[in-house]
Length: 319
Image 1 (cartoon, one colour):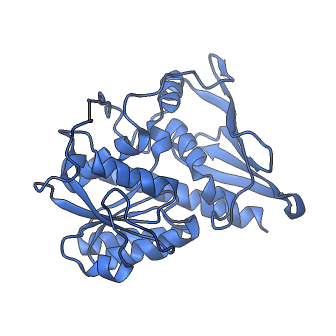
Image 2 (cartoon, rainbow, N blue to C red):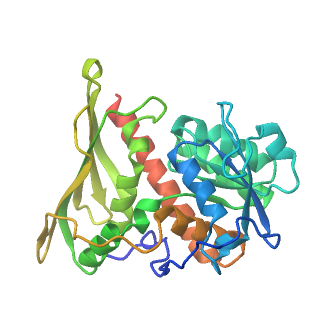
């Protein structure tokens, strides 16, 4: 089965990591001034990657101008803290990287889009399909790029799995994720775990939701969401997100095809370029007009489809 939703991330994004030891931190020739909103792990990685980008890539045209945090922080590698008000008003800031807790994504994205800034936001963009449609319409109205990061599609293990699945006809399958208890602000599991849902959509095309359940033991910080999905040719897929203290972070699969059964994600070596850097290059290519309108449309279609599925799963699971 071939779907227009498949391969929305360019599989040719492969780069060789150069020696960056003496690369200058901020070149005057860069076109896009950027601010990072939220400086947890992802936010600091975004700052680091913009300070030392891949030479010759579109990311070299980004220059970080500041970061925004609810905490009062000292400058980091020459990058100072600024306020949201300053960031939206400065003419030398064109781009915002939103790296906050999931529940804060929507408001931050809307703030910067309304100010005419391009936005790269960590997944999930919003906690509802309707809000995501509104934000994308706002981006189009303002004539700016809205990009939802999905580094899980850039991992070597996903690419290896995608190659294994290619050309096979699915009969039924299961993807089971386990991990530690969710922290506050991550939202319902269909949204916090949308990376796994995105895997399934990229592998098997457009899906629909047949049923969904939620088991919770709040006293022990345990939860388990089970979603029953169907492919466009009515093949069943089960997606399970299980969270609790002490659970290992892992993904297990059981995909039964017409010709074989896959029970393990194929092992693959780590790539030469970090996942966030790969995403930064892809986003920067959009800013530079190097990504086709067709690919932009495919990505928007896939992102909105996954958020619509997550919305429906939440509705059914919480009935």
